[in-house]
Amino acid sequence: MAADPQIITMLERIAAVSGDTPPAERLSPAEARRAMASVLPLLNEHAPAVARVEDRTLPGAAGPIAARFYDPGTTDPSPAIVYIHGGGWVLCDLDSHDGVCRELAQRSGLKVVSLGYRLAPEHPFPAPLEDCVAAVRWLATQGRDWGIDPDRLVIAGDSAGANLSLATLLALRDAGERPLRGAALVYGVFAPDHDTPSHLAYGGDNRYFLSTAEMEWFWGHYVPAGTDRRTPLAAPLYADLAGLPPLYLTAAEYDCLRTDSEQLAYRLAVDGRPHEFRLWRGMIHACLHMAGNVEAMRAEIDHLAAFLRRQATA
Image 1: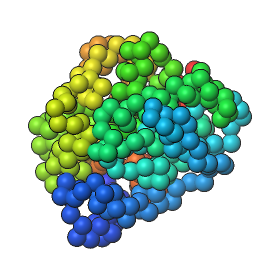
Image 2: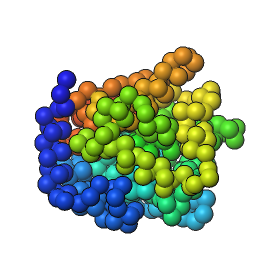
Image 3: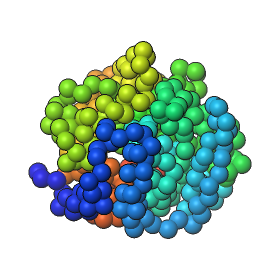
């Protein structure tokens, strides 16, 4: 099928706002962040109201971590989603994913804690992961201070945030800790391989929002020269996947990262690990941000939110 007509409209609007700005791989990280900022109003358009939204901090691996707390009006203590934003480990922040977190809080009925972890290249692997692990550990022990039931935590993330979410599960498991009841991994990047079917089909240019060249730029900033990009906590597709909680995987049809999620789902299926996989037909990378303008995405977020609610409240 062709890309959803409402997605095509969003791509046209993004192109109009972006103008002649070069693609990220031809910019410095600072320039790319400024370019992304110009698109954020579109990506957060029509975000729903949430009863309480507060900026907070929590202890991190190397100092305080910025966080944004979303409460849809739950009774304390209640389950919560830890949300890890995407952006190739280089771009985005709490503001870029404000609309996504509002949608999740409203549609799941759960509190959401969005993490503002350190970004590459200023803070390359494993610094962002260390922040995510530290934040989950704090919430799993001190979450009642925020009205959160620390025994009912789940995690979610998109793109590089899905990578960090899965790597967080792996790092905690390897440390003998299992504080998370489930995870939703949205069009994640799980390996540095760029000769996959989806990269070859959809990564040749930026027509679908994300390109192979941009992903190579992201990896180059995240994993320093001299470090193996396939180390399991950087590339979770190569990790031992035993002992993980149930996973919900999604892939967008027109996304160069689609094969990453398909390969991860295949590995989980072969190993008999609990998971669900959903291909978002007609969608592109970053479509999670577009629920305010793309009707089909609202039903998909409902599915995702329902999975997280089931895992958190089981």
